[in-house]
Image 1 (cartoon, rainbow, N blue to C red):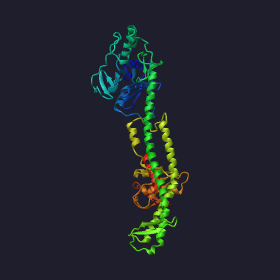
Image 2: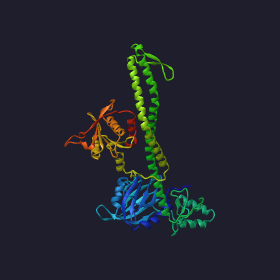
Image 3: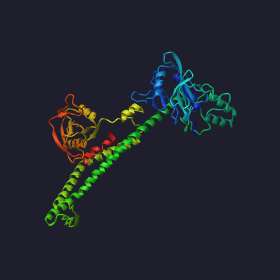
Length: 525
């Protein structure tokens, strides 16, 4: 049932309403919300004319002028319209009868300042739609350049419908209505045709489900009811277009935010699983210690090179035979088991500290995702609607990484020399500065606002160790001092500083605490 978007009768009715709004007004700034759409501000009421040649939905509407906070698309055609139309006065709005070609005549000035008449032509031909700027019968340029190249001659289309020839030519819907009426009353059909194309005050707009947009200038008896009356066709179409564009913007924001939240959830779920596994693994620590104790109790009875060892676990009386490393002495085998048991216990203790914070973040992120998935509207916090320059800025990474310790304190780590220099300038005097001792690495700034605890310093030191040349070491010495004790000598190379009043911490560039921090990098990096 759906008609071709914006058929000739819809466009004719909209053009007459547009003429009442536009003729005599001065055009303002030109903008492009996306690569298919132009908005021209006009008058002093903060309104704009929207012309969209999106193949999926050609649109004509009057909307509020774009806010300055929006970052419109930079495009040569937008720059051309801004240069040639801004400040010009609209003189006429024309549509050939039955055609989908809207021409807006603008009295402006040419490149040397002489008065000239320009035509902004919207060819609303569905997938072949285009926007053209025409001067003195010659195409200046087009948005898509599908049918007209610059400097090509241009003529407006002639009428596709004649009011004196009922039922000939024209859009599908008026033709179907004419033939539907002709079957019962030919005179009523002729009267409908005359009213559609030539009679003053002929429009009685109605809402018709299934059309694009869902409004029509006249009731259509061949389509099923209901067809509710609409007071103002242009206002109804504009409100519909505004709602559709808002819905599209909301869905685009929703898609972006859900992608970030899904990535964050995957990291948190993996992190919670790793911490849980560390706690479960610690159950093996006690049996491992008992095995080592049993081995030490019979160490004198074993010969070097023995490959296995049997013992009775005193806790439950079970017999066990376990392999030995023949390259190690029995005492060294026992010490290796003690060391592994201590590692498991320490890892589990740290995991028990971190797991509540991870589960809390996981629950909060799941709740945020549910809210984003069902929200009716979502603000575009990026503030950009497709501008190339703002997209480039959004894509450019910050010169430092940002992390949060389990207690919520911010830690920033320089990505490069520029990031290190920036962090020194951003840090407060009371913030803590950390750096791997005696080896190349990133500058690390731990926010000390509200006071820091041992876990915060341990987390920052782990990051300083990880983002240094000592990453592969088991432990790394890390210097830590207040930012006010760090100074940069004049003419010193980037990254070189002098410091005092430091303490030196032993930090591990691995383990669950570091993994807790590194898992934050994916959404933030």
